[in-house]
Image 1 (spheres, rainbow, N blue to C red):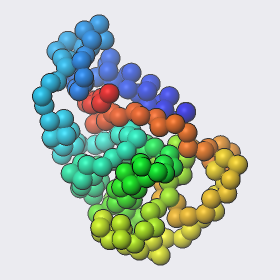
Image 2: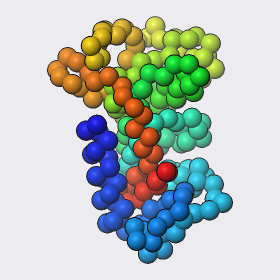
Image 3: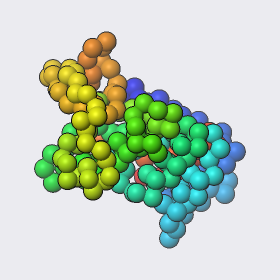
Length: 206
């Protein structure tokens, strides 16, 4: 909850004080939009975002509840390898059933970004990822092969307290801590989707 509040405050700031107008993929109400900040209909927002990512000079900050666009993932990895600071707040909600496959894909992409260009966690080209609760690696070898990820044997398993339960697994992204040795349980999806580039440009997806 604290992470969501912080990013919403940041979003509010940039919407009203950024020198560059935000881009909305839905109707932009005139009473809230900056001059010239009209709704964008029939445009490829993924391509617009890719252009902005490629032109980033200092930083790229994202908050997403899922990420499954390989071009975006590759672009972020490339920029991080060039020294651009890339930070992501992701949703660590443990989803099972009909959404499990979709969520596993997101976790695989998240791990690729954390590993960076050199595919090693803990080096300078890593993308920084923080979640509402710890995120664990996908263990399925076939899926990992599909995403060109190495066997998770190169990572050590950890046992952490999440809510009232102790969970053991390969933790790839840290979460918001409830106390020194415990984490919050994943809650409802935050559903925030926005990007801030170089502290000047904002993309909001509703």
